[in-house]
Amino acid sequence: MNTSSIELESFARIQREVSFAHLGRQAAEIAARIIHATGDIELIDDLIINEDAIERIIWGLDHQVPIIVDVRMVGAGVTKLAPLIAIDAVQTPRDPNETRSHNGMAALLDATAGRAPIIVVGSAPTALRAVLEYTGEHPLAVIGMPVGFVDALESKQALAHSGLAHITNSSRRGGSPMAAATLNALLLLSKGEYRLDY
Image (cartoon, rainbow, N blue to C red; front, side, top):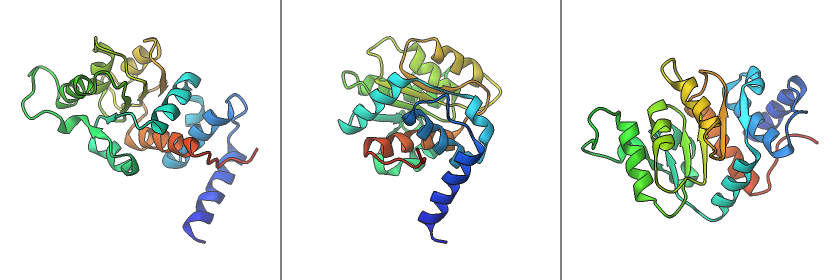
């Protein structure tokens, strides 16, 4: 089997094992891509996919708005999009009490002011907190999937109640593969490419 046929068979198996009936077509494509990237079918009950965020991110990809990711691993998963990487954005932390991810995210939000960036967080809850604490113009939409035991769940809960257009999940699970898979799914949708059989 070649790479293309393996991917098609993978999505066929996902669709046989997982019900996407509660999701719209685009949200189902995003969920399937996340499950494909993680191998975890139980994530279907964990995902929070805001329809407004789908529309906004597809619009943003079509109009080449800035994309800010928290760490290099997320950036490595979306190489076609040349994202800005928060952890590399500051040499001297402006707040020594915060993490590099928080300081870098705050710096890039300032640097992209007026251009409504797409934010993708796949590792650091502190980066997501920087987005939630930002007092300037809101980002276009936020993919928030930090992972871990300290503030990962709580920061995602805060995102879900923030009023920002968002795609997230409702547990401690998360990580760079989930976040990158979400953005890659949206990139495919922006090109009219679908993997599930309807």
